[in-house]
Image (tube, rainbow, N blue to C red; front, side, top):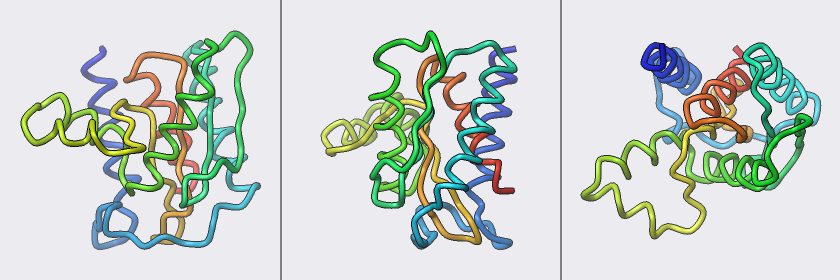
Length: 163
């Protein structure tokens, strides 16, 4: 079951990050105008709906393309560290133009992947995903409160709100 969820999350991240008909990866996408508060609320609502559906307590942070916080929600009973972690994941995904899962995978592989541990602002844990509208990165979503796979699944659900 866990591997199936991981596969679904990875596939969804790939789809969300495609960003255009040509399959351009997020790192190649330009930054757009900052996400509106309405769109930030939409992404958060979709993420929280996924968390509630699975009976997980989560914190959700939405940033603009520069990593500054635009919107935040925290479910009752979410662990105290979750707000800071969610904000960090969103900021990392926004400023580096990639899901934080990519850093997690590279660090886990060792070797050159360990270089990310020395970069300021890198969060090498699943749960941060760039938000793409009209082929441009308008911000990012960061989620914390569950396992890495759970955080990633909820973040992807939030990012998919724009598809």
